[in-house]
Length: 451
Ligand code: MV4
Image (cartoon, rainbow, N blue to C red; front, top):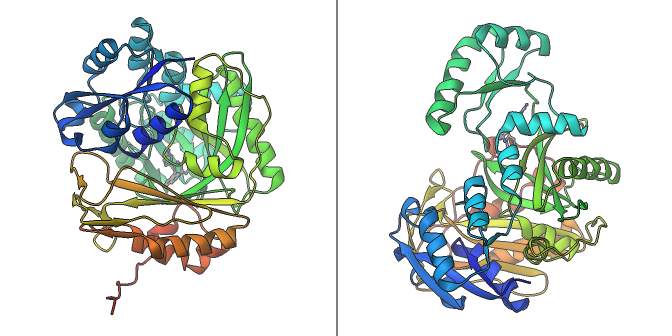
């Protein structure tokens, strides 16, 4: 087992990783930018190394500085968390060259899933259902239009280097094809420096449902059921839950088998997520694979009673997984508490937290790095806490979440708490009646002043 792990991240996920390391008897090294010197991950790690100024490009993304920090502290493994370098194949390669274990999949596995066309081709070979579309990159407009006519409108143009919604364009009829094609290419070129485009049938009003998997160094792959992630705004998830109110036993079994086939096809090593689009008839299609631990991993941890960070570390250390699949027991919901103003287009609201009280009680978990007096820096993402509730049924879980949200006090900055309170009261949400477009027509009521 590793003796010392360097955590190449900040915020709640750095703290989350430190907690598991402590429980496993593994020493920890925090890295931090000058904007994060007062952060709890710095305080709770055994050692901490300042690696640069606030901008991520000069600190949390600076590979040579991170490797230097690992060398001087004698760390034998690096956990990348999510975001930053978590899905950077070159970083995983550099770790290998330094003989420091990257806690995550092999570089070629990251690379394969990072390129969307290669990922899709890999899934077709593995027998995983994919959305009907082009086999590979489109050569030109002419080929694109011909394929679109064959597939049938509406279609969607996607960037092969994309993901998370960037460089995507829906085309409803042939007359729009040329304009949308030009815009998709431009956006892809500007965002990724790669203007490779492919085409798919546009699935209308889909749900985003993902399967958590784990694979070990011996070729075993298992699944840990699904997470429902359809409550998103501009491709930013705001709430996740497990199980999905839309998933039947039969669908879970089929999606679980497909996700395992996806992992097995690349001998996947680590924990990962296979994302699917699910249409209203419960047809499911592979969308992307995330080769990292995700923000929303706690909902799975709560319903399968399993520490996913511990599993990542064990897999990286060469310990085999149990081999069985994990089915949800009860229900868990995660609300992302962001320092954003939901009444003002979710505009970021950095600044000092003057007062902070997090909810507590049975079945309530709060993953956070903030405290009263903490200054939220403007340089990084705006998530300040994840509130996760667990209860025997979805209905009870929603009630517990309402209670927990009412107990949550954050003063000094605006937060997404009032958004979640209104979401919990929404009859369609309560019925499980929603898809990825749900928040497009969700109108927040103006907030009432407390008397
Ligand atoms: C789609 C789609 C409909 N049909 N592909 C958005 C993020 C990127 N990973 C893929 N996305 C989509 N791909 C086809 N063929 C609709 C979306 C999509 C979406 C997917 C998941 C969650 C939220 C979304 C919001 C808008 C569009």
